[in-house]
Figure 1 (cartoon, rainbow, N blue to C red):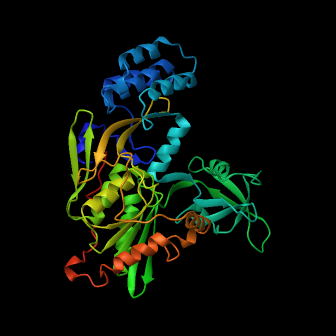
Figure 2 (cartoon, helix red, strand yellow):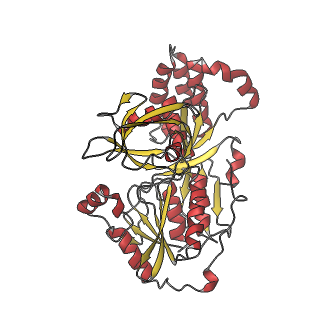
Length: 445
């Protein structure tokens, strides 16, 4: 939030997610400490252990540390000898486990890199989505992402990936293929592909930084109404700008109402959730956070809404954290009708710190509440229209994702019915807002 930015390092970015809600920073210590110790920390497992202890001691939301003697924990940690960073990692995880908080956790360098790639909304690769086709059992391209090397090279959905840099993909999992395709920007990669009706052929590509699309949208005709359907998968570093483009484009297409689909969205950047809430809300509170000292900060809308057209929000049990901040803000301000099943129930905020050896630490630093002061932690948000999918309906949507956001999707169909009962086809002219330009509202943490 903008008020809290002054409490953190300029390198810090606040995030929030279903499994983790975070901030990223290189250091919370003074510049002198950084200059003198940073290099030594890279080669000192014991100093790494103490860096973790100091961060938790300084930031953790529970000043009683779950009734643990945190000073004694430090003495125990520093009394040990560590022959490797891996030994230090084990000791760190054991110490953090005693806090009883699943969201305060240590990440080794690979785990930390995966988190930062996910929340940044960028990857280094060629820009394709893949799956193992259930019929052919072959690794198959689902999509070549816009402005990616794959799209520029003419790779198409349905292309089978036979080999990656000469390594056969037969019986290869998607995760293993992804690790082979990702790599340093500017490095070459060769794919052997097979297209329906053609012989196998090679494609030479160069890895680039790819902006991962997290917002997908389309204008749907529902009777005589135009409905802008937007699905937001996560609150990444590019989510707010992608959401802005989606709303503006749907406005230009004369959308009469909107359906915002947050089902399965486990969270992401806190600032992204605030920016997106402001695209739908002109007035009212968005979120209130409380730190361990009891300090409370409220973030409000700032009259920058892109539309006031009627809105329905779809949620489920996997809609968590940043999704719940956005849903709670829209619900409490009577800006949207919320439809689906009860949300996950995560109301804790973490900061994520990069440590000296490339590992990372997530520390719970605050508790958040909806604008009406509701604590949703371990409770979730109950939709205005509660509608559970049956097991058969869930299987049908999972096996055929093209049905999601159509009349074959019961929760979407219920959203359309709710909006129709609201007489949304002819809103007053005063409710129609012109798209706002981006830039001035780009908050940094």
